[in-house]
Image (cartoon, rainbow, N blue to C red; front, side, top):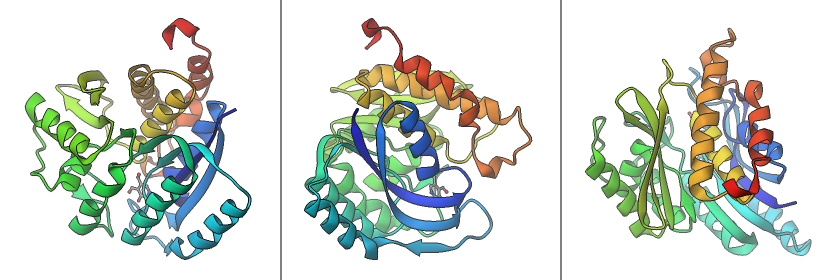
Length: 277
Ligand code: PXL
């Protein structure tokens, strides 16, 4: 069984980051270790929250891992929460990773950075994205990291230039998430230097934490040996279904998407015949 490390915040309420990544990656049959970068009462799309930056704990944690000779078959990072964590995460990847790196530079959406982040934080993420085998920004994140104009209406050339910009930073493959195309939503990717796009019908409302569901499912697929395209397609379909499942319940939308209700899709995907891999 593959052992991976995911590094993101722990939001106690409102499914996102670790509370999404842990169950999804476990569902893929992957041993999932977790390093929380910050502890929040709830994510920052609620009206208020508490926030504790855990960067002070990281030196002791990594020293213990070193003593125990712990390492990982892959590292997946998401929302971090503070600028100093970026350098710490880069150091962890260098010291403990011996496989695939997925960087989801979670920091904003719809043209705006999340509460607590500024342009300096966005730009500082560029050097982390440089370490990625796969980087999964949305259009907002890619434009902010690259210091480019954000466009809410975009075309093929704009998306391709964002991908090339991310690749120029050093990211080997780029998956731009949450890309709108008419009534559809999906991903615009640069995989091994070639464009790949995949879209599904867009559900009626945006939901919080769906980028985390996408990246977790994508990383799960990759770590179970599916190619990046196959994993990207599955992650689109799974995210869409999780959103649809949410609307079958009366759970308030801030609490996150109902990915638990379509959990069996992960197991079915993992068991897809070998030819699909
Ligand atoms: O990836 C979304 C996310 C993760 N973690 C925290 C957040 C958000 C989005 O707002 O606030 C703490």
